[in-house]
Structures are given as structure tokens and as C-alpha cells.
Image 1 (tube, rainbow, N blue to C red):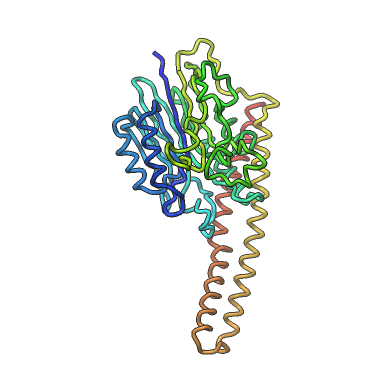
Image 2 (cartoon, helix red, strand yellow):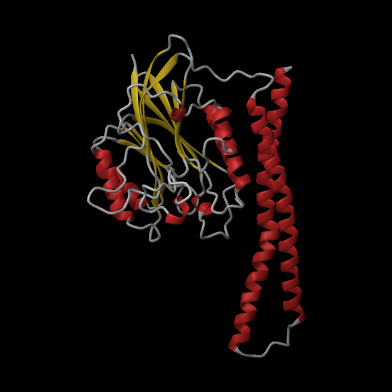
Length: 397
């Protein structure tokens, strides 16, 4: 017997206080989902527990099974809603998650990772992975190594846990476009398929226009200066899949299901565009979705080599930052120690000393404890990549 899956994913931009029209957008999303035919929904950036509970209550009649992945200081922001029983859940938190002092970025406070919900439909198992990788934020992309190791960790997690499932779905904001190193790691190691590049037979015209999901000109929250050069934006939100060799999948619909604006309003559902995928799973006749076979010129070798290079470069940068933090912190400490007894006895001097002491403490902590944590996390990922590379060489010979 076959199975039809209708998956929906959206980065909801649900930051309390900061995100514009958050309450109205969450309400509009709930209304849309109530009237939709989606059977599995993966959401990111649901940072308010109240928003999650509102969605849970609103969708209880059509998507009665749900799970929120609690993590970090404010929660991972990840949640899954399902029409069918969520049998097992597990959250894999990444060791590298941004920086605690980059409060305006906030990734560290979310304790990000990849959440797994194993869903049972009759005698079939469906692995649903919901995730949200670290954003770039700047052109110099100071978080490249963080995101690459998050991608590799996610790829290995999917690769090691997907075998019992009849079908595996990875959905979320990967902050990586096709061709990016992070995207290649995720799609090449567990051999996940991108429906965007596959033929969509019998697609509904309303769904057959998949485009950029971030900084898209059709989104009310996109920066006009950013979209000027690339109106289509970047396709960084994805639904990827693979099926057990005993099954095969037909793509029924794929695209961006939400309207450009919330009905009756002048704003979009989020600063990202949603993605949906409808799959029909049936018994395989040709077993065309087998695991990727290794070959002497496997492109994944190059992907792994690039990932190792990124991590090696990052260790050099981290070592330099340690020297910088310790030098600046040490100089401030010596200055404060050497000027004891020379400061005027007034409030202004006390405030200046307090500020300098705070900066001194921050730099010394960053150069010792935090630097060691980041370096060890990076080394853990690097050693895993190097081990993977070595074992592949042995297996080939």
C-alpha cells in the first residue's frame, strides 16, 4: 500500500518584541494550516513558547501530534506537527553554535541543533528531521566553520539514524543555497534528494514556482537594497528526502505555497518564504533510490576536503584570537593594577574602573574558557571529518 506525504516548512521569524507583526503572522499561519492538506509541518524560529502552544491548540484537530525541541536559553525554535503518531523524538545539539557575546545574533542562546521525530503511519516509519543552521550575517561569514560543522554533524546524524525508516525527510532553514559547501555536505553524505532539481510530474501551477526563500522581492520584509541585484533571492530553506530501497517516490507538488501577503494585510507570513512538498511513496519496481555508491572520482571527496580546509583555517583564526584576547585583557589588568591609588575619589572614576574591569574580565574569559570550548568543539568536528576521509580511503582499497 502506498503513502502520500504533504510536508510544509517555514522559518517563522518569531522573535518576541523584535519581529514585526509576530502575533498577527502566527495567527494567519495557524489559519492557513487549518485549511491546508499538509500532513507534516516543520517550523523554525518559534522562539516564544506561547506561540507554540497557540499553534498546538489551533491545529489539534488536524495535526494532533506535535513536539517542540527545548534547548539552550530560549529554546531551539524548532517544532514539528504531524497528522500521524510521533513515535520517538530526539534532539542532537551542535557543539558549535555561535558566540555568547554576539547577543544581537542570538544563535548561541537558542542552543541550535537538529531534531528528529520518528512518525508511524500504519506499518511505515517516517523520519522527519527539522533543523536551522547558523546564519551568515556578514559578507566575510565569520560563522562559516560553525555552519560547515553543523552541516556535517547533521549529515552524519541523518546518515546514522535513517536506516530503519521507509522515508526520511529533512526540512528547515539550512542557510545554504545549492552548491554551497554546507548544502553539499547535507545532500551528499546521506544522499538526500532535492525536489527542486527533479521533474515535478502533474504539478499544480500554483505550486510549480519554487523560488528564493530569503531576500525575495515578493516578501514585504525583504530589504529593497538587497533584492535590487537579485530579485529572486536565495533558496536557503529546503525540504530534502530519501526513501528506503524497497520504496520509490513520485513528486506530486513542490513549491512555495503561501501567498505573497497575509490575506487582507500588507505584510508577508514571515521574512522567509515557505516551501511545501507532496510525495507519493509506493513499492519500488526498479529500486532507483539506492544509496550513493562510492567511486574513485566521487565528488564527495572534494566536499570533505573543502570542509577540512575550512576547519583547519578556523583553528588558526581561533589561535590568533586567543592571543589577541589574552594580550588586551592582560594589558588592561596591568593598567588597573598599576593605577591603584592614583584614581580620584569620585563617582566618574568608579564608573570608569568598573567598565575597564568588566572589559578586562570579558577578554580574559574569551581568551581562556570560551576559546578552549570553541577550539575543542572545532577539533572534535575536524577529527571526525579526517576520520571519515581516512576510512573512505581504506574502504576504496
